Amino acid sequence: MSKGLRGALILERSGARMGADRVALLAAVGRTGSISAAAREVGLSYKAAWDGVQAMNNLFAAPLVSAAPGGRSGGGACLTPAGEKVILAYAALQEDLARVVASLEARIGIDPDEMLGSLTMKTSVRNVYRCTVQGVTGSAVSAEVDMSLGAGQRLVSVITGQSAAEMDLGPGKEVFALLKSSLVAIAAGHDIGPVSVRNRLEGTLLSRTDGEVNSEIVLDLGWGKTLAATITRDSADDLGLGPGDRATALVKASHVILALP
Image (cartoon, rainbow, N blue to C red; front, top):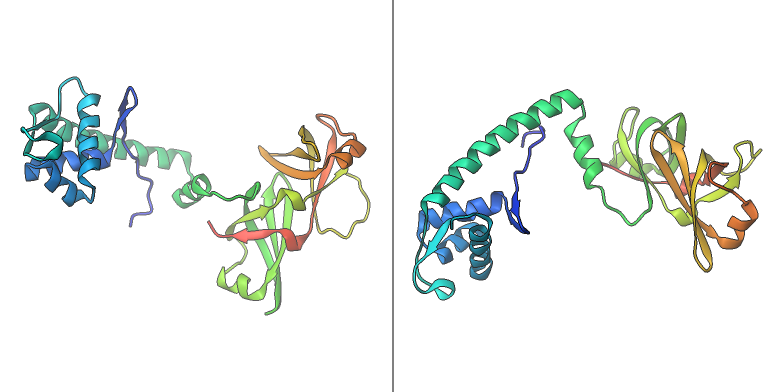
């Protein structure tokens, strides 16, 4: 499969949507002369295909499919002249979109895997960062992974040696670092003195949201990156931080989870 970016063309009007899957259904109706046969060809139930045809007919001023008597419960179907034009027009638009996307990819200079991996990354962990591995040290039992977060910030994760080997970690490797907000401690200021926690991420208070028991503290780390920490409300009161105040997030290296894009 090509590594390059590909665009998806979707037409929409008043809540009715039409994309490549609907166009494939439309073409199948034209080939088979039947909604039920077209449904089987594209892997849809008859109801889903019928609903799709109705949605397409609603999307355009003129219907794209003409169903013979029998309608929803059976009968033949054929493309109208408008339906045939839509298939041709969609193919032409898709070709134009492919050229635009190829040009965009060249202009923005972002690797497709990096872009899509970042956009599609979903996890229940609040803090997720794309990092670059700077170095890996350790043994077969454990490995220490040093990463650059950007904005001069660094992160260290301690994982098993087996995990490091399976992930093929090494300098230059792109990884996702995941930090649970409940495992992040917050200290006021940047000059906090010696602590046993390996990771210190310096930032400024962006927001504080209080609940009955806990408070969520969000720090601005720079370069558009933020970090959320969940601490007790009493602790948040004791810190006395206000918007713009400097603070440091403390995270144990063993609490930094790594994932591959």
